[in-house]
Amino acid sequence: MPIQHTISGLYLITDDSEANLLLARCEQALRGGVRLLQYRDKKRPFAKQCEIAGRLKQLCQQHGALLIINDQIELARIFQADGLHLGQKDTALAEARAQLGPDCLIGVSTRTPEQALAAQQQGADYIGVGSVYPTATKQDAVHIGLNGLKAIRAAVELPIVAIGGISAAGLPAAIDAGADAAAVISAVMADPQPDCAARELSLLFRRRQPLPCGSVLTVAGSDSSGGAGIQADLKTISLLGSYGSSVITALTAQNTLGVRGIHAAPVDFVRQQLRCVLDDIGADVIKTGMLFSGEIIRAVAEEIASAATLNLVDPVMIAKGGASLLHRDAVDALLTALLPKTYLLTPNVPEAEALTGLSIRSAEQLEQAACALQQMGARHVLVKGGHLPGAPTDLLRIGSHSQLLTGPRIDSRHTHGTGCTTASALATLLSQGWSLEEAARHTKFFIEEAIRSAPQLGQGHGPINHFIAAQKLRDRLARFANREDIEE
Image (tube, rainbow, N blue to C red; front, side, top):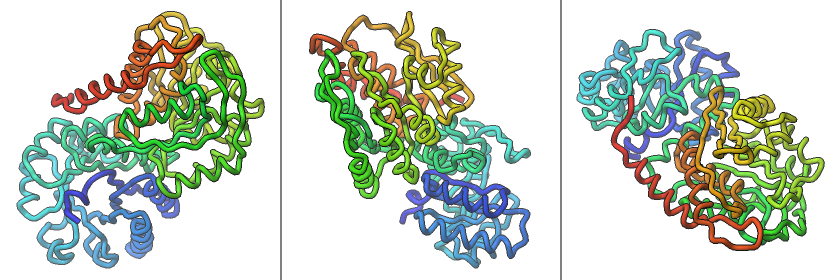
């Protein structure tokens, strides 16, 4: 396999966790998408290091990842590691190559173009570059910034691994500045959900790939009028360039005037649909919509628990015409079974009020509701504020940070399917390597255009225009993807 294709994606460096905890976290992270795992251990006795390295080798083989040993040639030789990583003050590269042979990947940490060029001339297979951002993991690290990364990218032809302070917020800029891979420690190892953290980071490398490049599984109800539910989801996913698969939880008889009937799918059949898709095609992101009953919600939560995906939950509770779309036992199941597995929750104001018991009348209360939903288990939250007066303002809560997304209010009754379409657009953009913040901003634009160009169908809440909006969003995404100015 060519080296430039080998050294790419998410590169995890182990921390000083207790051995069993370290192994458990590494296994979860590998399941989440880690492609290169560096075992770094400066404290344990050599015999214990051998025990851990042997287990890590097995885990890497199971998940198709490469095991790289930090500095210790003997440990790399004993376990026939795929690679060895050296610092500027570690063993000389020539000595490591002589002992480990030509097939062992050898990387060298650098922080200047001169150091990177020297490593390339000495026969390194890849270059570690950093610290790109300030980091608490290594107190003596020199912060070179994105400009330093760009300078080294311009100087060498080898694959580059960005190191230092990498997070989901900073990784997109590092990739855009030239990183082929990114090394992380605490962003994954210290996360309570290492598999989710790894999946979030690994998907960001999709931003370099041509479309179609992502896959989204939607688990939702069927809308006979075609404006919402499974139909809106698949339109959005396909038009924006990812592959869409579906699990139908219920059939609805509805049109723009309202819902006339709901027929739930048997729970066992919902499970069977999920297993068929996940066991074969798989998914990068799973988006759930109308799940109808507590029994179906619990079944979905159980089936997706072991899937290495980002789970985006749109808690579809009430249709535009006012009909309830959740069985009375479903809210408790949503809170207890599904929210703890949720990467992003996307309620509108009435849904957020129903889930939290809070009254929402302002931007401050949007944030209070988002924080409450995080405390209930959601990793990130987007509370859609279109039901509030004034310009429609959404609140995006990413970890401990909140930001408001505001756009123009478009005077139209043709808004059927905006909630489903929002969630599906977010899921699609995440599957293609856009960060959550980027995906939310692009989705806001997409929904505005879809409402503005609505085809004026039906006598009630008519459908939006997925086709025209997708054309405009694809043009917008192309402009963003081709930008050359990388901010420091």
